[in-house]
Image 1: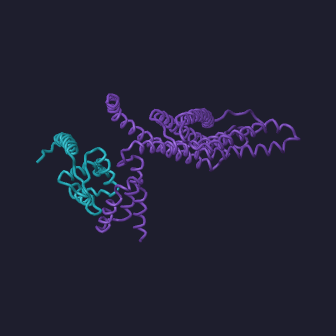
Image 2 (image 1 turned 120 degrees about the vertical axis):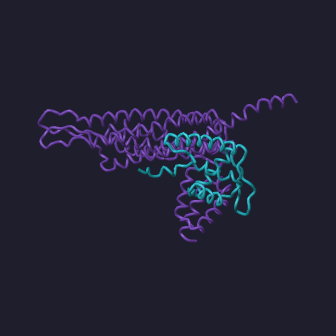
Image 3 (image 1 turned 180 degrees about the vertical axis):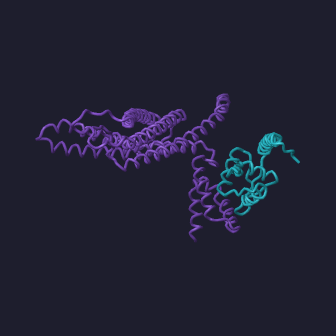
Length: 105
Length: 324
């Protein structure tokens, strides 16, 4: 039985940080990359809400703008926070898979 | 300009000014790209509108200046307190609208049904809550005035409103004595109308007075904390009174229908179908003031965080200044 909508419950902040871990990107490129890696279509309002919060927390940093587009890069604190969160997620993922009897390939 | 692009522009303009200054151009570029890529403008607009609402409430990306957060706390306090001016008259309407139906003659009076008893009790508790709300609001008003004392606040409007309310109350009360004699009944009626009109005008103008006071003055962090706590308590009480009003209205409708020829005793609301609107009004006002109180609490926390960061630095800096 499929539980409707639970697959969408992914944290946009985690997706943005993961995308920026590959290098600086501006808003439109971030939306495209996140759609490609996670299959999640972030709206511009959601994306900039997340970017503003991450910027306030010092996890991402805005670079000088190119015309109307401004690239963002992940900071040292952002990389550390992302690493910590992914390790925690992977620990939960491996426990869940083991309990389900699935061997990660 | 098409209606879709107008909708997107409207959604972008719905963000607060500080957000627009910082992100408007960037988001505009992203939106252009998404529209060119075939994304629905309606979906984009809905996403922007929802996000502008959360940005206004959460304040993400707002400037870090203390003045900004103090102003924001005061403005949201105003939003939270405005509900009071509607909730109190609505509660009085609710209290006055419930009455007892006459029992039919000819047989012994039957007890009030269980649903009727519940409605009656809920109405009584609502009365107590209203009194409590009144006392807390008056205390908050004194807190606000003392917190803003000594600041350059325009007092003209304040004096007019205060004077109007005082004269209104005095005139209305004095008609109670005048009205007892036939010779003075017309004069009493005129006085009562003038008094009530003055009181209602003062009541309607009070939010403008509070708004002016907050715009021209600044509350200290301690006073802000107290007023924020007071407004949070008020919102909980609004929620409670909303539950009581809705509960009483539901109980009224579930009273057993009396059988013809039998003696009965029921409660009824003179509002009829309007009571549903009254309930909706209470719910909306509680949500509205709840958002205001929640924003003011968050903003106040932000000021306190900044104060905690700055305070340890201020002491040693002052000492250094004194030493040199």
